[in-house]
Each structure stands twice: as C-alpha cells, then as structure tokens.
Length: 282
Ligand code: GLN
Image 1: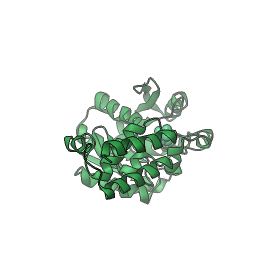
Image 2: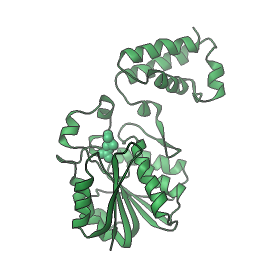
Image 3: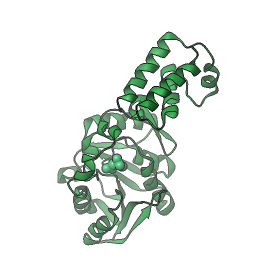
Image 4: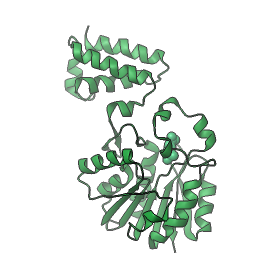
C-alpha cells in the first residue's frame, strides 16, 4: 500500500469518528510519523512510495489517539502562534488563533520597543514570546503557577532565544507581586470559562488543564482579582490588556473602570467577537 492509500484509509476512520478536518489532521499526523513536514516537497514525493511498516504503525497509533479525542496539537507536540513554533503538550493550554488578536492589538496600538512587560497566566509563554520577537522589549517576565505548563514555557523560551524570566506563582496571590518589577505593559489571558461552559466542553478541550480554562462560576474571578492586585505593578500611563471570552466585555470593562483605569475599551477578533479589553493606569 502507498502512503497515499494509507492516508485515505485513516482519513476515513477519522471522519467516521466525527472529525470534520480528517484529511488535514491525517496529513499532519503522517507528517509527524514520517518525520517529513506535510507541506514539504519531500512529503509530497513520499506519498506514492510504498508505505514503510514502522511508519504505518506509528501513523496508525497517532490516528488512534486523535480518534480518542486528544487534540491534534498535543499529538504533534507543537503548534504555531503568530508565525512562531510553540511546543505544547499535556498540562498546557494550546495557543489559540483568538489570542493572536491580543498580540496584534499591542503591536498596532502600543508599539513601544523598550517596555518592561509582564505576561500573567503565561502558559506556553506564547503571548510574551511573540511580543518580544515582534515588538521588542526591555525586560519580559512570565508568571505561571503550573509546573507542567512552565516546562513548555521554558522549552519555548529556549527555542526562541528569549530573555524571558519565569516567575513561578499564583497571579491571584499577593506573594507573586513581590517577585516582579513595576511594568509598562501587563498582558493576561486568564482562565475565563464559566461553570456552564465547563459542563459542555468540546471533547478536545477536556484534555487541556482545567486550571487554564475555568474562571470561576461566572468566568470573571481572574479579572476581578488580577485588576485589583496588578494595577499596583503598573507604571503611570502603563497598559493592562486582557483576553476575554465571548460576551464578557461589559463586565470586564466595568471592573477596570471601577479600579480607576482610564481609556478602557474593547476590541474584536477577526470573527467580530469582542476578544480583548484594555485600559491605561492614570
Ligand atoms: N479560549 C479558550 C477556550 O475557548 C479558553 C482559554 C481561557 O480561558 N483563556 O477554550
């Protein structure tokens, strides 16, 4: 059997399991099993060769994982964010395209190359690392409480030759504050799913850490506490920018206004959903 025939067989299995992107996923998984990037010429040339037994077995095993609901990104062990490769796997939130909105807003509206930046709830580190690479900064700090997530953050920092400093701590506790300098820009994509959201997660998302998803019963716990605590770590004129869940903009803007932020506003993502809320410290 050729690789092309093998792809067809596995894509059918994936499709029958309810996967709407079966062909795409299979190409990625065969790329991973064969060690050839599925967008490369080498991969395309390989498709008409007779499939190697070991590669076939490996490919089938990866397809089995995908059929069980495991996210494609975890199986591949990496995913792209803002054009940068990020290592991902069990225990860390997968970088979403939605989150590129936050990076784009900062690049378009903020544009300061010599800032001290803090990335709260940093996870894989994708936001901070993208800002460092695409905008530049004087210093970059990441705060993360999960050891499992921090493992990926460190790998990603190394991959991108970053100067990011990782501070292990809980952004909801004052003890984390003492370990950080006053910043010009604080970015934060906190857990913001509600209790109701958590009860109806897509199968793939159930593989991701609950601590990176659940933002308390109304989804707003982190916005309330982070705004209150971390405004003390912002320089005058500094900006705090959050990613938010669909429909949370009014409440999050209200929280920021209540804590004295100025010029509080929200911005939509490419689908027209309000995705970020930001404000300036007076
Ligand atoms: N954007 C994620 C989702 O919809 C949630 C991540 C988060 O809470 N920051 O699954």
